[in-house]
Length: 227
Image 1 (tube, helix red, strand yellow):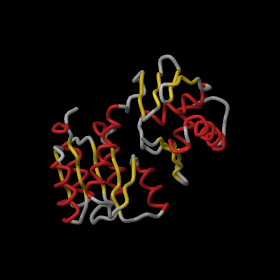
Image 2 (tube, helix red, strand yellow):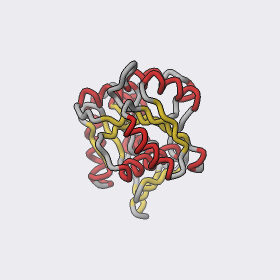
Image 3 (cartoon, one colour):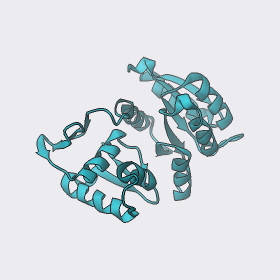
Image 4 (cartoon, one colour):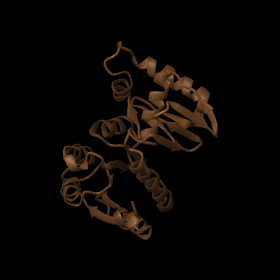
């Protein structure tokens, strides 16, 4: 997908944020749409069908959490990437954001160039959001889902099935935080009941084999694979 075909919706009640962020993303070639509150954001999201939505949390009329929940109810936007841009850093607001259906969280203030880089990283998920893709490449890691093989810096490795499935899930959307309950559902499903510690053990093993910096723990939420 070309940049000129990508729509980004910015929702924030601060005009300066909309102007500065919107300008920098427009300079990169993206189509930028803006809204000044959550209610307007939901309306424009439904009308424009953007690939990425950047939502502030604290807004009038409808806050970002409620707006995210409303957007996730729109069938055509189920694959849209949603990230929060907010000055609030408390754990509870981050958890609430992920529970509402957000994919990521950006804390402001943030330099425009850094934000643009973050947006580019988020948009790369559009290429790997389908678990049916046979080969996924994340940094030095290449995952061949059809052959159940991975390679690290060109060196082939064999992982136990659950470690492979966990890695494949995290790699399907690099940077996205997968909640523990979603990991248990997608990797273990209706198999023998397991606890959260099972995920921790598998993540620890993957860190030992692939590098500790590849995985990030989001306290109280889950895990993500970083690029």
